[in-house]
Amino acid sequence: MDRMNEGSHYGKGPKNYKRSQERIKEDINERLSDDDYLDASDIEVIVNGTEVTLSGSVDSRHAKRRAEDLAEWVSGVTNVQNNLKVSTGTESPKGTTRSTSGASLTNSKINKEQHLHN
Image (cartoon, rainbow, N blue to C red; front, top):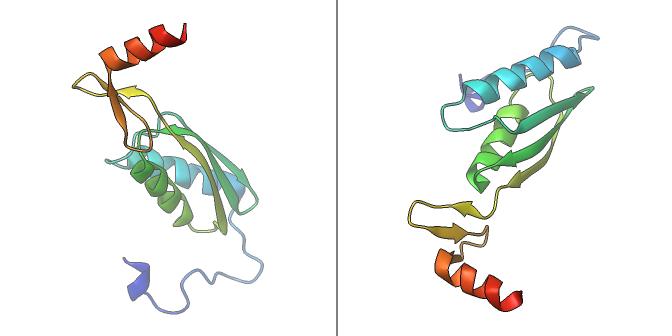
């Protein structure tokens, strides 16, 4: 169910109820693992009270935002610190290397530049 369509009492549990760190971490790990659009194999989840820290690396900015969103929607989470890094310099199918700025260089140009700097 979408939270936008839920009543105004969503998340209001019994007095003094607080989800345990272990349950929060387990739920986040399950959501990250079960998501079809996210490779979470290099993501570490740390829970301190109701605050979550994500660290490690993912393959795109979209994946970074998706991981944060998945963690944020877990019941009991009040804040997500997203320290995920987007992997850079990954090899693309056409033999180019891409940076996070979207610029690309062919392998031959990279080799030429490396040779000039040596």
